[in-house]
Length: 554
Image (cartoon, rainbow, N blue to C red; front, side):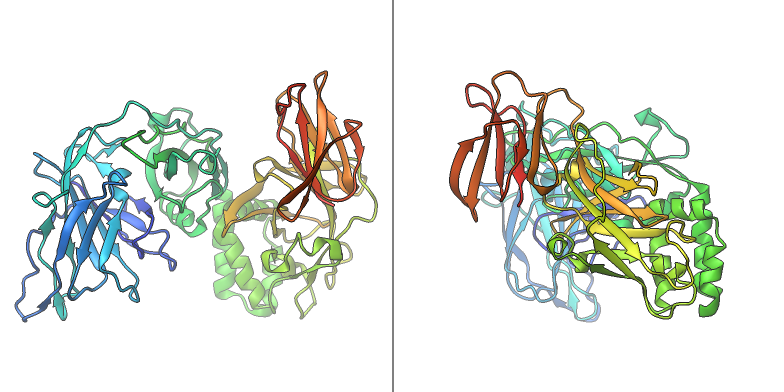
């Protein structure tokens, strides 16, 4: 029989990671854990008790939640050591479909429990394959409180099978959630068209990570190497660099993929979705791995006075690629900078930018390694551009231009850095992270779009990180949808313009005081300049919206 073990630190919404290795770890916050394969059958009695261990209290009142299909409920009284094993069965089948081991926070004082993993993560005990959706049938579960084997022994194994409400009678509905779309890497973060905030039928998402030594578009050639099971904890923009590092360390150079499926809020009304298509592959190259080995060697063997020279002797293009691809490369650079007095400190030089770029959310790595003779960490200045730049407004909107500058000891100019620098910035609220574009302006006035950006979400805030080889002016913009419909474009200083507007289109400006609506008025023209803040709506002759509304911020 093939079972599964999942360890988590909280009894709230399930969010877990799994690998094909024998590893079990938990994050400090308990939101993400590793799930591993186990071949051990469910125990059926207390742990043997040769030393007179004190048995833990038995689970009681096992039942299925009548208001939340597939959620298991039970109570526990008496001694409890924050660890529980749950096994799920289909009536008439001798082997468990699934096992989960929950670990609760030590300070938790719990007597009532709810477990929702049954709805999302089941395996066929005969084939070991993941069941995409729960088949119709009758189900029950068992619970056992686990002791430490030092002072306390396990409780009895208790089954819901013969208890009131202990059988879940399930009929699979004909309705199924649609699989997620627009699946794409922002390595190591994963992005897709996340509809949970718009579709109340979606509980969360489930991610598979895949690997192939060669690039492929055939999903059958992609090996599933791990993944994340999530309720509320896994969303588009999710990034767990340490977990991705673990997978890439195990599998090495090659192509990495992921896919997503939507999980149903109510499996009695709609089934979980099928898997999305696999993402395009992300190539982890041999060159970036070699650079990482070189950085590790410098960290282990170099004296502080040698660090800058040895890092600057590395191939700059390979180091740039490593910083873009290898999360650990940035960690090593930061540790080397600590040996030299610390990384660069961000400083916002324009008061109008302070609310946009909270310096606690800005980080810079690598800059101190360019500081040839300096003993103090350099300062990254973030300010307004000195001269306006031409921006193609038929391509970009919600434009925010900023100047990055830094004074480095022993460096005549910062237009050609010996060591690439990685910058992390919070994405302004005016810019949709799914359409974020960063434009880099060169000395001759031309610009290029930075294509190697890592866009991810952390603690509710969207961030972007990218690698620089020079400091100059940059524009954070929103790339326009490539469709041919109308779009409201916003520029700097209150400028607005509607492109591709159909005949009869009307533009309205809504004003607010805080969150309270104040006024709504039609504008005389589809382009111009406005003062203050509000929201612009483009409507047709029957007052139906023609495109997404845009926030105007004064």
